[in-house]
Amino acid sequence: MSKLTKLNLVRLQWSRSIRGIAAVEFALTAPLFVLLLLGIITYGISIKEHGDAQEAIRAGAHAAMSDVRDTSAIQNVVYQALNSTKYRSRVNVKRSLRCDGADTTSVNCSDGRAAEEFVEINLRVFSNAELTGTPKIQKDVEVRVF
Image 1 (cartoon, rainbow, N blue to C red):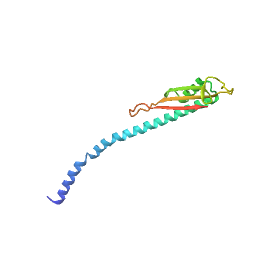
Image 2 (cartoon, rainbow, N blue to C red):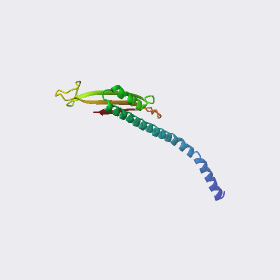
Image 3 (tube, rainbow, N blue to C red):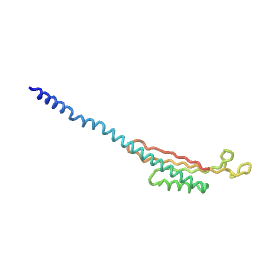
Image 4 (tube, rainbow, N blue to C red):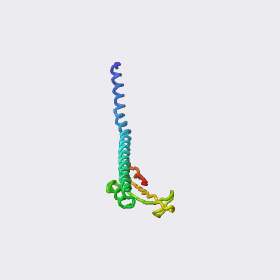
C-alpha cells in the first residue's frame, strides 16, 4: 500500500469516529441553554411584577395623602392600579394614630395637641412566574404614609 492510500485510510477512519461528536455535544449542551433561557424569562417576569407592585403601592400612597381616613378607598386604588384580575394579591391598609411615638386610639394627645395620623399599606403579590417549575415567589411591599 502506498503512503497516500494509508493516509487516506487513516483520514477516513478518523472522520468516521468524530461524525457523531457534534450531535452528542449538542445533546448535552442544548438542555442547559434552554434552562438558562427559561431562567432569564422567569427573572424578567418577576422583575416586571415587582415594578407593577411598586406602582400600585405608590398609587395607594397618593390616595392616602388625599384622604387618610378612607382605608377601603385606598385599598381599592391599590387593587385597580395592580389590575387584580392579572395578579393574585392581598392588600391590607391600616390607619393608626400616634402621640409621642406611641399608638393611641384618641384623636387628641394628653397635652391637647392633635395626634399624628398615619397609614400603613401592605401589599403581597403572588408571582405568576413559574416557567422553570420553581415555587411561586411572594413579594411584599410596604409603605407608611405619615
